[in-house]
Length: 177
Length: 183
Image 1: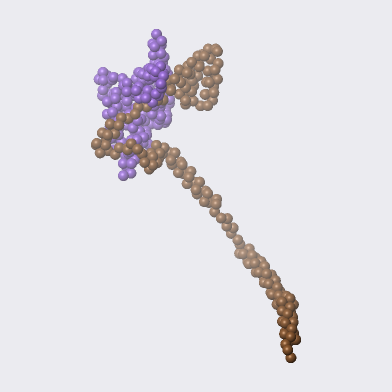
Image 2: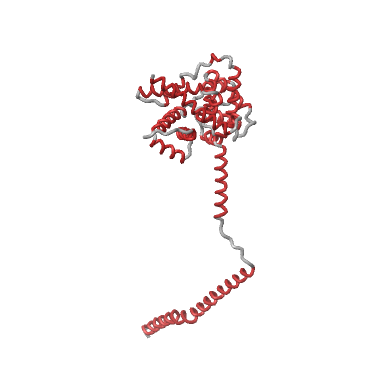
C-alpha cells in the first residue's frame, strides 16, 4: 500500500522530467516514449533499492543510462532521428497564447531555432544542459546522475550555453539575410 | 555608449546573469557595465532571450504512457490528487526540507515545553522549618487577635450595647403594662 503510494508520487513528480530528458536526448517521440515507460517500470522494480533522498538522482541516472544505451545501439540508424517534433511548438504556443499573430510567429520561430540548436549540442553538453535548464537539477545532482565531476558539470553547462547562443546567432543572421 | 572588450570571465558573468544563476554582486556589476557599453547590453539581451525560451522547454509526458502502465497492473497516479497524496508528494519532492522542518518543529515544541515549565525552587530543611515557625507565629498572632476580639465582644460590646438597651426596653414595656393595668 505504502509502496504503491510512494510509486504514484514518484511517477507524478518525475514523469515530465524523465520524458523531457529522453525526448531531447533521443530527439524522437517514439523512442522517448519507450525509454520513459522502461524507466517507470524500473522504478517499480527497484523501489527498495533507493532511498527517498536519492530518488531524483537514481531516476535521472537510470534515464540517462537507458538513453545512452539506446543511442549507442541505434548510432547506425541515424536516419531515424527526425528532429524534435513540431508538437512541442504547439505546446509552447498554447502556453503562451497571444492575440498578436506577429508575436506568435516570432515565438514559434524562436522555439524552432532553440530546439534545432539544442539538437546540435554535443551529447555531453546536451545532457548537462537539459538536466540543469529544463529539469531543474542542481550541479551536485547532475554530477551524481551522470557520474561526472562537479567541475565538469559547470564547464559543460557553460560551454553548452555558449554553443547554443552561437548556433542561435547563426539562425538570426540567416533570418536577416 | 562605448564598446567594451569582452573577456572570458566577464562573458561567464553575463551568461550567468542572463540565465538567472549569478550572485547579487555579479548582477549589479554586469547591469552597471551594460548601462555603459552597448556590446555588453546586446550580449546580455541575447542570452536573456535564449534563457527565457529554454526555461519553458519542459515536455509533458503523454497520458497514454500512464494508461499503458495501468494496463500492465502498475499503480499509476490519479489525475486529481487528494490532500494526503499532495502531502506525501511534498515529502517525496523535498525530503531534506521535510526532515529539517520536522526537526525544527520538534526542537521548538521541546524548548517551549521546557521554558514554560513552572519554576520550582528547591528549599533546604532549615528554610522549611523557618517558614513553618513563621507561619505558626503568624497564625498565633491571628488567633490571639481573634480571642481578644471575642472576649471584647462578649464582655464589652454585647453587654453594653446590645443586652443593656434590650433589657432597658423590656423594662419600660413592663412598667407601662403594670401601670396601665386597672387595679
